[in-house]
Image (spheres, one colour):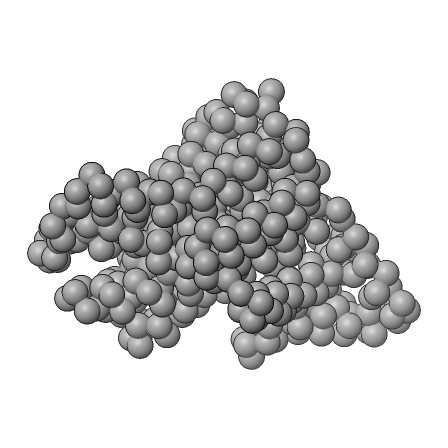
Length: 424
């Protein structure tokens, strides 16, 4: 019966069904074939979303959308342009730098690609950058978002494992910075080789004004992060504070929010949150079926039967997650695979915080991996260029991401230094 579930799930993915629907249809078919009462569907879906920390996700989504609607994107881009625009290929570095700053607001790669890409890709095309390069760097830089805190995938990982959200937020900071700096280095090398343009150096006053314009927005990230780490409030309370803060800053500091566009933002955020919660609910049902069929134990025994060496096991898990990440959205893949693979990692003495960072980093790399990386599709649609050209242009950035993944895998201290420093 389990093969029927897997086959139906894969067929639905091939037919481009939304992940939540693919999970729901395959689970329904399994239950009907096994003769299990369908009352199990709402029971398991509800138990999957009846987790207090998950309430923080709609809050962070709404706060990020409010800040974006409030003019944050343009202000971050302007500030980064003052800092980096004078370097050869400066606008490509601005693209990455803006993603690193925007990451603390959005927390998701796809929203980063869509929000920044709609501004940066046309601007880079206008200044003479190759359109495939512009799209590729936008997609690649967006993967920093789910690593640098606050991060929606990290909240999901914490929910699934019982780990501290604050520790996971801190654990992603250094890997996220490494990824951003690595992408900047490759972008600079390519820009020098292709002689991409640069801007005149900005004055200290321009840089200072740019910083002041973005300060109130960036302060929200520090309030969220250090409030959670310091035990001042829970992640769910932090998300509510973030929403109130975003409303106040967007209305009274930036002056861009009004009743009409707040209504639009709230509706969009409700749709995003609802689709995510449906996904969580069906994924919990899917996970219950896998546990019933003892799939986690089978996968664990197969991997550990192949080798009990920690680094060999991590290599196998990395390969599996990168492949899965190429055709499955990050949160869906985490919901299905993370609890299973965490048990395997714990069996070979991998720190659970370290493993959570590895898993999230793996899956976001998949968002920019051909042939079906979601961020590649979003960027290529904005730039109106074929996915093949964007994939080829993005190959150097993909290599850098894999190098960072290898470093994070081999050296746990990269992930664990900040959590051990602040939360032990």
